[in-house]
Length: 448
View (tube, rainbow, N blue to C red):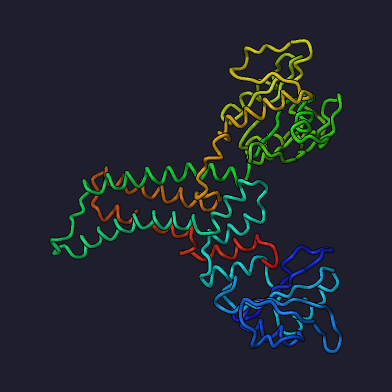
């Protein structure tokens, strides 16, 4: 991190203001070489300075320049932010000028990556920065802000300290058995302690998976054979004509997607091609995509036609989705009944054109995912897939430690698993295996 990086930190386009951000050991020196106004080299940190940017004798723009000195900056380095007028041309001219003067174009997420590597934030806070940018609901935004301010880090650190305390006690017993004042750690002593750690971690995991729904939404596939009203249902949920609706079976040949806010959680809707036996090559591809979508989805809305009896394809879809979280929707209730409703244990009878019926479907989704409880949710929990995966690895390590005790293994064997659990939790904060850092920050936008 010896070089000085630069990027445009605001969205590219016509706007009132654009910000060009510079960070690194030569940030203030380089900007002062193209700036006319106060002496930036002697300007105090956390100040905004009025002046002009010049390329030689040509004035490029009238600007405000913010100066942040190490370590009190976003990256922990010297940072300068040039507030230009928001024209695309002038912003790029300033960027090009800074690159000519010695700055290197920043990689995606490199400013936040430097903040992490310089110890300004931990990995959970870094990920929360991106979560705030991508938040689509008030709930997901609130979850991200709690991560950014360090609540997730504190929760993980507190739990790690409980494991560390037990590791230290075991190792004192092993390395210094002559210390009679130290409490003797036997398998009988250790088993209830590990059981309690497992119980606590399972609670954290359960609440974290609820938080993940807040952050990422619910991947929802609308499935059924052709012409049962899947596209009409999608359009009614979205309140727009997203999918083409006709009486011709097989109109939808590819995936049609959209998003809707259900009680503070985003429903990521996918209207799939009708599943049927077909010789049409294009439609066949759509049907295969529909089947793959079922596997990947969190929720399946399985649609049937009230005016048509079940056939072999319907039976196949019922079997295919039996192990998925699903809602069975019987559509076209306004037509003559030909469907045997006793084939279903639970279903919603509705018309996709009735707003009240659509609200019943939304209520069913809220009931399944307990979305009514979100107002009482503890937002200090994790909502990140990478972090949840590490929690699961830590839980498995604790369960391995518990199993070792049950099998009569000596305490030092369980201690190995405790070390593994401690390390997995450390990886959530970025304290081990920093090789994940490059991949993580590559998902950020330029200038962040």
